Image 1: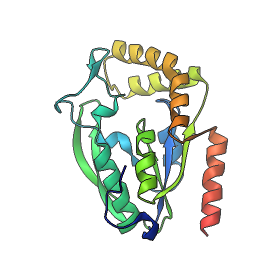
Image 2: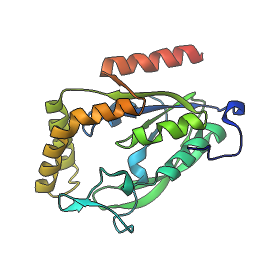
Image 3: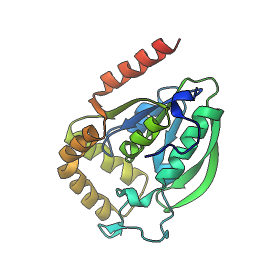
Image 4: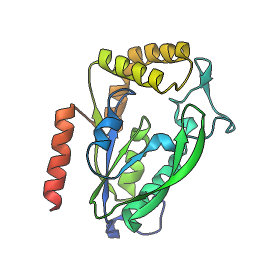
Length: 209
């Protein structure tokens, strides 16, 4: 993908760089990133509204696992703006209502790194590298039974969709998970445990001092 902005990435001196945090739904991406103390952007907030033209369907509802359901270009533009200008505006998305319900400002506030998480995180790795703002790209890995349980409990607790649809989706994810890890690696992400992910951040922050 060509750079979104005319400045040659090799000449860009960003204020911060991105650490992409991927992983299957239920792997703990949100929990890991929000506990880091660094600015966080959730790619799930860039979903299109449920009535957006051409939305794919699966399990009796919009297939929110398909990249066709989100605005990847808008996400990359916001991340470039955040890393080069120090702030940006991102959507606030309500998954249970299938629509954007507002916006919020994200500011670096002196941070040298931004964490980006979401099920579509692998899709932005190449674009962020082309823009010269990628610091690292990792994928959290945990046993399938854990991701199945944590995903189902989260989705039921948040009443994201009808329970039967959530169960069907969870079973589908369970069997597809090994292929997801293979896909993450094909997109240039390293598979790491939670402990290894913490070590990645610790080393990056130490080198940035």
